[in-house]
Image (cartoon, rainbow, N blue to C red; front, side, top):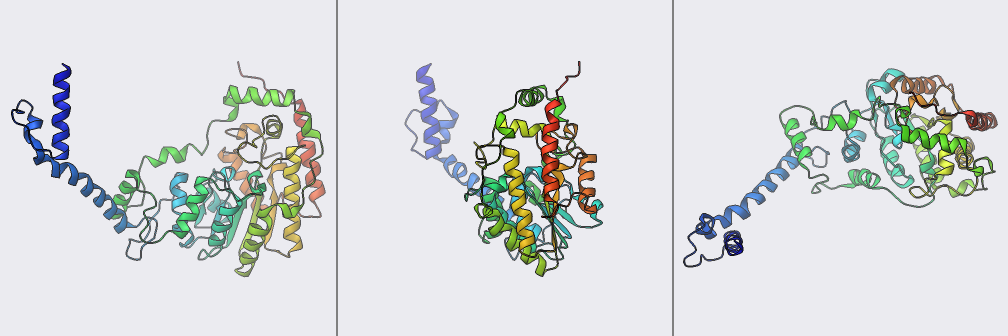
Length: 402
């Protein structure tokens, strides 16, 4: 049996590599084919790859080439890995509103944005782990978007970082803005199939992208996850004492986001008469206990010793004061995280992501109406509301539904 297997393997190798046929090796059909199959075996994959490249070069879904078809995107959004590849397309296409933030800003749909602000062309460019370096590049490009009236920027603890680190999605977004005509940003079969749809006159889209996008919207509440709820319950019932300790002093100049991202973008937007909304995303107050007991520093080394949520509030104060000190009347900060209407845990799909549609619409209404605007004058009131919200959560306990 081993001899037969060895002969078969030898025949396959000779067929692939075009070796001369051995005398007497006629018992296997594949051996008799010998080097006659060598050319098709080698050429067919090459032709296949050339065909895929030709489709992408002709359709040009990422708008890299002067001869490509004009982009045609679906209004149903895209998976984040595709969205970052499409950043160039979005910022080169007229829009009324652009929203850019981290994952906490991703669940807002374009339809919700249009309905809240009365626009016809809003787009949410948010993706996971938006860091200051890539935020700077994307927001700078976004300000130049034709017809832009409003720019919304989600700010959370990720923007507290003091290093130049970027995650892979951020690198992809920058690559989208800097790629040359000869680049092939995403050589995958779904992209080719979506390009074929565009070639036929439809949108650049494929059905298999829809489930990945839809799971962001109206996801089951975190209260349906006993494992997460048990963790939150333990974090609140047995809190890390540091949550109530003073935050370490950190100068505002230690946050690169302010000087390298916020102020240049705010000034550029003011020149173009674009209103900028800064969003401090809502988080269930129970989650701050979880942050303290299970810090995320392994992913985002933003935290020092002491109270984590107070460090975040201190960062927000630096943001608010920088806007006022630099005379940016077109920039408004919205402290959604202190609004009790937006921090109900039943509206979140996990410990930080608000995904219930009604709650998302409430958040946009609050932004539109200016319900949660915070300024240097009102910041002390906001800080007190945050302290009170965290303190009140001490009495919360999870009662599983039986």
